[in-house]
Amino acid sequence: EESEEFAMACEKTSADMRKIRLAIDTKRSEARKRRIREELAARVAASRAERELRRQDRQEAAIRRRLDEKEGKMRMQLEKELRYRQEIERAERQRERELKAKQEKEVRARRGEDRVDVSGRGLRRIPESLYRGREQQEKLGHLVSINFSQNRIDELPADGFLFWCSSVRRLNLAHNRLRL
Image 1 (tube, rainbow, N blue to C red):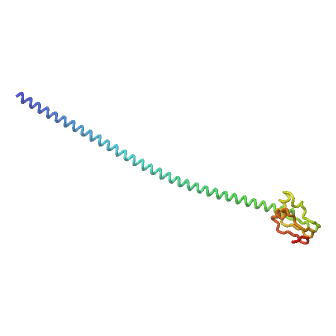
Image 2: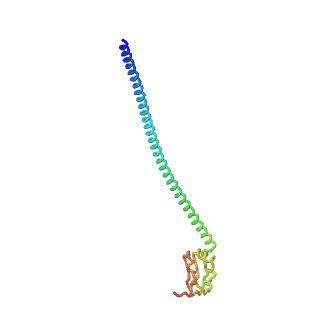
Image 3: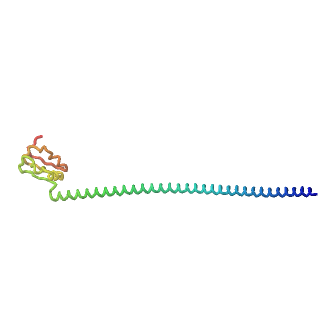
């Protein structure tokens, strides 16, 4: 009987041990499954976060490209406007210069500074006082009419007199002693 009791106690202990091992194995298995689920959930969350970051990066890159394009267009527009304004300013300065030149020409015409008339004075040559010196040469550049008619001039100065007469429209040398 003792041996039967001992055998039953051993069997009961073995059965209890199996139950304990089964309970431990079940807990370990559940813990492993829980860890795997948690790791999988963390990976999925990380993957979602990475996808979201990549999406945000693409959006930011697209926004930067659009901003760069707009900036480029604005820069081109500003440069175009600047060139247009510069052209207008150049044209205005040119008009002002032309108006000033015209007014100066009118003033010289009123004063008689746009013509020289030394006709009928018996001159043998063109007086140097008309073309020697910077100031005189400048005045020759504004002359429109020069009248040396009815004198005794036999030659024109060789040292650039006619060069300075760039605006002359009428040069009268009639009735002189010039030879061609």
